[in-house]
Length: 329
Image 1 (cartoon, rainbow, N blue to C red):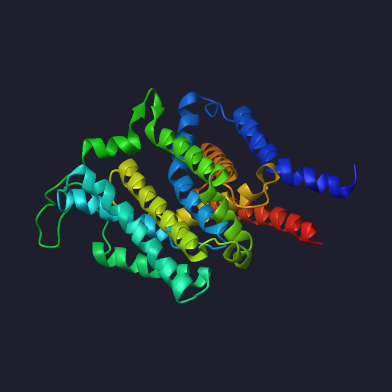
Image 2: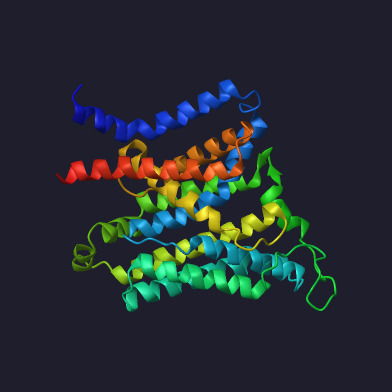
């Protein structure tokens, strides 16, 4: 087998082999790893990251990059908590407002990128800092939880709804509800991107913007839709986070940005896609989830997890860009 053939096989099946290898390793070395409760815990733990990563994937499909998704998720988390604990709003308001807020942030991103023509990375990086500052200003730097003390010394009037907490902690047919939401969303977005005209327009726009424009595709509208979707998914991820932990943690989404980006780039090489795709992103998130779960079982300190995540990102980027360089040569 020559080197080119070996590199092609590595690119196409390497990520899957690594996922299987890591899974087998932890199954053999950790007694409680291969149990139903632990497997569902892994899937539940990656649900929030995967929602954010799908948003990043969509922005990359149109040749963009949304770095503001972590901060958007953080803002959505504290807004959902504040609506319940501070303002005693009904459930539908708590669910809708953070998602709409995420969509508005996506529209603002697209305005900066499409109209003012700021490069994607710089525009969303600036938004990331602005949103992080807004959520800290809104909460005055405090996390939001039941019966918290308000600045005037009184206790917060509201509490987290049980039905809201069920979204992040409940089960349906014995399966954690966030896992069901995750699998349905991955399937729906995959079908939309792969089998609909709208999805094909997004890939064409990302592949060659000028050619897409000449073929009649409204490029700016497609890019606007991509960033609005990205922001909306990040907003929903924030809601899911608040429902899971039962509080509004400031900066909750910040560490999720790196995991979501790593999942997206690992996904480039799954089955040799060579481009952003939702199924690959899901497998990338699964790999990260398995690693973090296994390392936790091995009692490795939490701060060493960042080394693992960074290493995964470097390996994924290396495999992807080596392959892309060979394809262009």
